[in-house]
Image 1: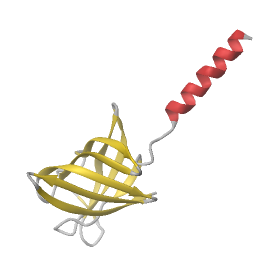
Image 2 (image 1 turned 60 degrees about the vertical axis):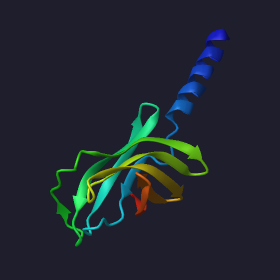
Image 3 (image 1 turned 90 degrees about the horizontal axis):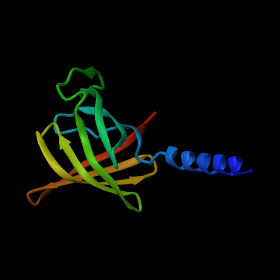
Length: 129
């Protein structure tokens, strides 16, 4: 009986650890200042979440080569509750890092960031399947 109970406790613990954060997955960015978009893969990294640019697209939607493919665009991102996340974000079109605020509503992610007291909107990203 004891082995059965320990097994059940271990199973419940593993199931809890396997639950994904709602932010995890693939996201299509809003168009940047140059009209380019990208696909960002968000995964756990330590105690936070990180997002890597996996594909880049030009204004017509055609895949393009980018030196930023493979680069972390969001990192140190942690949930604050109510669908809000805080962390860091990199903006390739501005070549700048910002303190980020991400707000998740369903399959839409509002992205904004501030740097040296100057804030900018990063648009709304949409979940990509």
